[in-house]
Image (cartoon, rainbow, N blue to C red; front, side, top):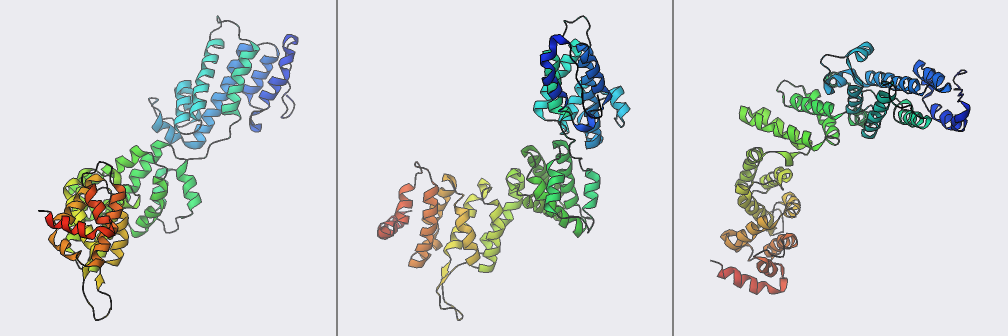
Length: 432
């Protein structure tokens, strides 16, 4: 070896392999070309010491993996692999971490990928057989080259991984008014986290956000960071955090409970709430819509508050929910000293309601048909053409959502048909 140039001398019987071996070894990262293990592997390779060459080259892989793990996060390695004691130094890796644990830990914390972990286990077995057992058959130059090529590709030519943030430090920094809200920096810090750290950070953010003593600065920064983290969270972690809301409900501290729901809404995980949590949150919202009837400002607020839960309405609230939305959308006829219009309804709520109806299935559609057929107040109001037209808008949305086997399909067809109003009202009058 001269400088950083690796010189290969192969026995005459194997000289045709020289270019291939030269290319393989020159593929290692430049800073590793004077690695003593690699130099030793080259020396013994030149004199046909294939067993020793395999052993030395594997030692270079182990050395590189240890250094990469220490650079990325020894703390995370300790959380990911149970070695029976805390690993802190390079010597601890030498004394207490076997090769299988090293490969598994490197994979779990993101130093190597899944494919690399599988290939390296095979390379480890190659070393175990041919370097660790002298009575095994002699390895060929092809076997040596294959093992070296795998090690170079997946470890010795692979750059160092990104360092992992310390969760404690990161959460602490969120309390600082100087926290950097650079989206690229946050995505870089959070997106590369292994699952175990994502789990820990997600739960820490939730806990900090709902804590009564949390500052407005901390909450504000959590509101900025959490949606970015949730974008890369595995589904099981999202579910686990959402289900923690049930614990707050049981503690009966309303401020903390509402903060928990606010957090879940902020990261758009309402769909992972338990039935108990949904009922707890949605029941007062549906009741507020019912109470707000014909009070347009309050109807606007009530409908807006229900939007995040439009696809999550519990069965026992569905009838009241559909009734409230339908009556709010239709509105009432009237007069005003300020306006020339006679067709009144909650304008802001109406925009949301049409989209909320697009989430209906057959079950919700059956409640819509029921309210049209049975609600006397609604039946009186749709006698006005303007109100019938508004009801027809909803009916058309529902008609597009129902299945071919929906039992009241004919009723909806009559309601939707402008040229069959007489038939529709005749059927409505016959409805008991």
